[in-house]
Amino acid sequence: HLRWAFGLVALLSSALIIAAARGDLWFDEIWSLSFARASHSVLDVFVRFHHDNNHPLNTVFLYCIGNSQTLSAYRLFAVFSGIGSILIAGYIAGHSWGRREAWCSMVLIGTSYPLLLYFSEARGYAPAIFFALAAYALLWNNLRRFRPGRAVWFWVASILGVLSHSTFIMATLAFCFWSL
Image 1 (cartoon, rainbow, N blue to C red):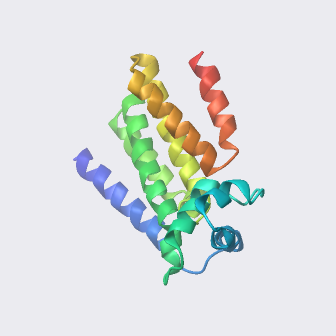
Image 2 (spheres, rainbow, N blue to C red):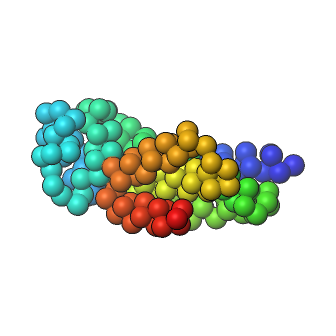
């Protein structure tokens, strides 16, 4: 019965994220979109805009989307990152503590108002959370049994996390100290 419960929680959480992603863009999202629209190439996203609101990975996504007819298209990267975060959190809790704890973790994360907000806005927070959870899971599994491929994927997740939001550097440093 827990498999059905996992599916139901994932479906309910996804529905909440998608419902939250509907509506008008926030000012910060419009600001990010303006960076994307002012870019002449993907390289511009990285070298032209030195601003805290420029979350490069999200801005590259917005640049690639171009002019969309629906505002929710700009939030797809965040929505998929949020859904992925809920699934990875369930995986981590399930392997750390058990199935019931995994289910509870998914419920708590999937219904948390601040996280639903982050998972539904076109900013760098949702991908940063996703890549933090992915990097944690990869590092945790690698500390139990080392695999070079997992180490590579850990660094890929960490680099993408930094590109999602610059404050991810703190998470990467914490992961590095933990692994020592």
